[in-house]
Image 1 (cartoon, each protein chain N blue to C red):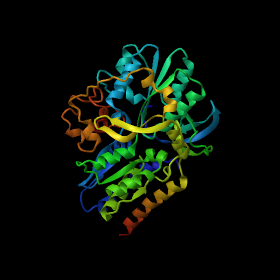
Image 2 (cartoon, rainbow over the protein chains, first blue to last red):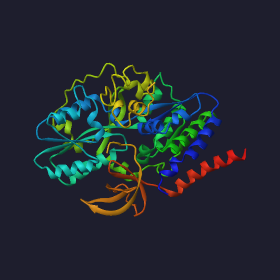
Image 3 (cartoon, chains in turn green, red):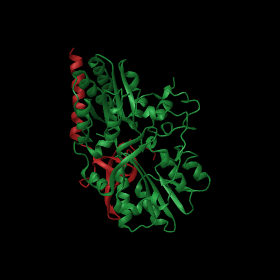
Image 4 (cartoon, chains in turn green, cyan):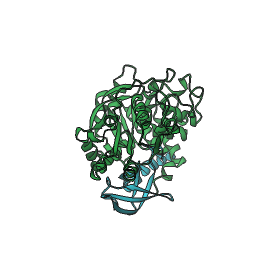
Length: 362
Length: 82
């Protein structure tokens, strides 16, 4: 078993889709939290195979999309300073700030480097002791263990020239925000499999209970997603609101304990601003006071930022499942992956980029 | 590498220590990458794992994988009996 081809078997996907069609008796709205799942759905055309009335709406699980504009502007301000090497996961470079993006800062002479892992940034700091190396520590629960580890490594190696611009977000508070909104349409969730691989899925039980919604932990291959949808639909039709795991080859109830331990060692919960959505209580992680030394925002004094968002972009509504990309007047006209107005058009996990790339343009 | 939450499974082909961290080489269908194995201390050569931003965050459970596929086969068989 290679754990790929088996889960892309078109015959098995059709079997599951047929079962969904047999099971559905009325319209339902299901949200897939994770932008990675949104892309899989578009790529394999699963949205077009589902019975009419079964609607998938796309959630806020795109780390690049929800990183606040203030934070992007801070990254630009730090990267533009002299003697800095600014390191980041690749997707962040094209995210529009108030003026320009990390690419344009690089074009004007700044040393901005794409890294695959936070440990690559550590290596750059070791190799360049005369420079300050800043790592843009963004993401959901999936990147937090890696980002936390870089802090521990920097401390262990005594690196004085390494710091992080931290902007972490967490899924469960975002689900509370979506379900608690008076405009909410979501009746069931596909939970993001890889977030759950770190955190487990114990955090979802109180949410399912409080809002009476089923939640099914779901993977990323077409068969995984179809199976997740089938399980949510069965629960909706039965009127039950359990949490189920359709990705048990990867996810356990309690999650990855060593990873959670590391996160809790380095980070603490904080209120976090989500781009286009606003502040969600307790939805972020920041460095604990004992690791303040590694806080790039403190070290480089970039607190006073007044961001300016594009007046056309409706990314916030898209990320809350209230609108689809094609309902935006700028979609595929003024806003394209080459000239994005909002982060959802940039990222490989953004809903607008998925609609554009896979031809859902009308 | 652009994608933070999407990940494909890879096979562990080497395990070693570097800078005090458990590290390994992972084969993604012919492409090999170095990854950190600190969060999967029980990893063995030949295990499949899913990697996020250079870190292995779990080992794939073959038994569970087969059970999921068997469940779907069951739906299929029920369908063909009708």
